[in-house]
Image (cartoon, rainbow, N blue to C red; front, side):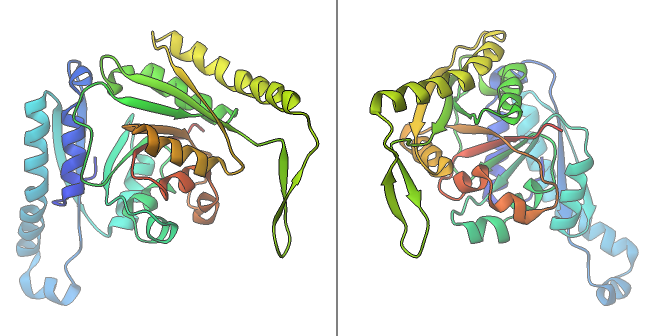
Length: 297
């Protein structure tokens, strides 16, 4: 868990502290604080010991409070700090860490520009190949059992999310409410690109459209149901129709007031441009729900 003294970081710590079911089992939490380097001229004037003392003192403000809160909740928490820039050090550390899950708070601004260009969470997301839970905004769910949505697209990445939820059920509480979400296109019409986009009827009969959409839903949901059932999780189904999956999912997440949305991701590494086009990014830019991104190599 990357932590600082911000309200968003405190909210992320508070979220982990509410994982009552998870924390009944031995749980290791490593807290990480990033300290910016002191400018070289100032560092020479102050001396190495003074600079070291300054970094330790500043890091302790975040680490000690966070560790104490987690220990009171039952976690085995330890902290450390490194000196460097957040974007470089944090991204590098989480990319190479052996943690089962990276958890971090984020300001939760919506809008693609703010999300992709101004967020530390975004810098971590494009380089992290571990499961990453981003808690957005200062408000977090306080109950143990969460209302969780799993977005599926029919790919192995979506199934990796269902597998993660099944294997780590305790993270979501004693009795989580889980729903599977999939979006199919509206086959009754298509959008023709051009100077002025226009919708054109496909001519497919309504009953044929319904049959094809239902078949698509069944193909996507069935393997996920099987994975979750092995962990004793019965999931509801959310069948959405829309031309832009990210928009349809975001609308459902907001309307249903989900505590957390779990999604698969291709894991493009440092290719920030590639992430910009993903469904996960589109969803993140349109709602402030906590996001669990699972990337399987």
